[in-house]
Length: 112
Length: 113
Image 1 (cartoon, rainbow over the protein chains, first blue to last red):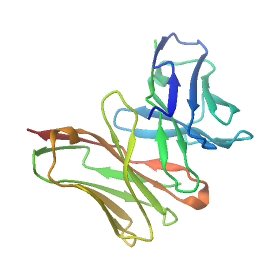
Image 2: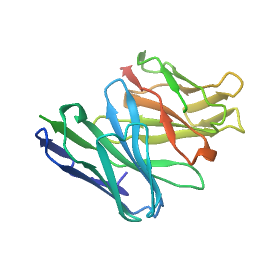
Image 3: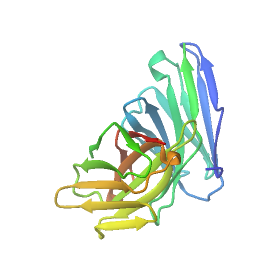
């Protein structure tokens, strides 16, 4: 969905490096999410935020941190990347009244 | 927390045939069940959803059914076309818990021309 953008789209990095993935949205939604997708495992929630002052851990938050800089921006950081963090990462927003989620195009991260 | 199981993991059908994907959930508090289609290189896109106060919903060739008692819901695609080939995900959410979404593991659908 063009209303949710992610940068970069692809990133290759080395073990131990700090990485930041960025997400921006123009849908005006307060709720934003970061997911990780691995083959055969579906989408797993890393962190979510219901407004600028609200940050919550998801089921797999270890090794990750987030920052909600504004209503429209939600960043995911890997403080010290490790190879098993190689995955597709998706940002999403949701409409709290109707519950529908809208996903960005994803970031493919490879940690060597 | 919620556990969503999805079957089958892969599905091949001939063009024009129907495809059915099934999901079960564990948390009786879940009340919103969306289905997403993910094409290669793209993010998941919502194709249909259903709330717990209805048993079936249709949108052209796509339908979703929900059995709250058995805690399962299904996606039905009729008259399949090659452009239906993609990975499909089911999900469940309980509004009371703040709109966390729990996803199934996905079904890779191939429609053979």
